[in-house]
Length: 317
Image (cartoon, rainbow, N blue to C red; front, side):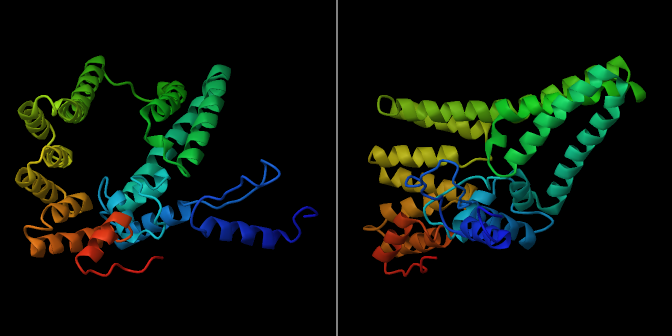
């Protein structure tokens, strides 16, 4: 209180800093311990909360936050895919059901660990370690997006499970055959959900690496990627980008059109089609530019293209 004066005023200043746009520039501060709460997270979390409240049951859907943020952002200098906080992103994309499941999962782990600590000193020590790492993970994951890295999150989840294991002695043990079947089914489900998208991404990467020397082969790689993962627009976007660079405007327009059909909330396809058709079909190009502006109203390149077609972008925040 002697150092900062009125604590209420100090807290109010930090809140104002937090709500400011952009991270602070502390290069001229005399101490590296200077406190400034400014960041872009206020804007990120605001959009996430609004998403969850607008669609409290279904949310935006998995991966949908990045598109809603582009539409609703006021921080024009950043384009993000994550809400920089696992509770915020879960609420935005999965609504209250997803948030309740997250709380139930973490709460269940906590209850199991607390019960397991009674199994003896070793279990109690393991419990302390698991709670410390789990608490750090939750706090950090609530203000940043590092939780998406399996190399960080998976060990924490494994440690929580290990700490809960001593308490399993009080539960009815499943039969060994049941355990084997459950493990096999889990591994099979993981293979189905992970291997196919991974291979599809590899085919897309190969297409980008080889198209200059084997254009037809690159297109075949992208066809394989589509077959392996029909739920992504990335192969179509890649085909459009490659065809555009190769000078095949018609194929590029068709590919970006396929990307729009697969994911109509993605602005990039509309934007590039507007560029490609600007001379040959200005009316269609203008319609695509208008849609791109609607989906990404603060994007500098989108705003410039909109003005080219006589469209007035919304004012800057």
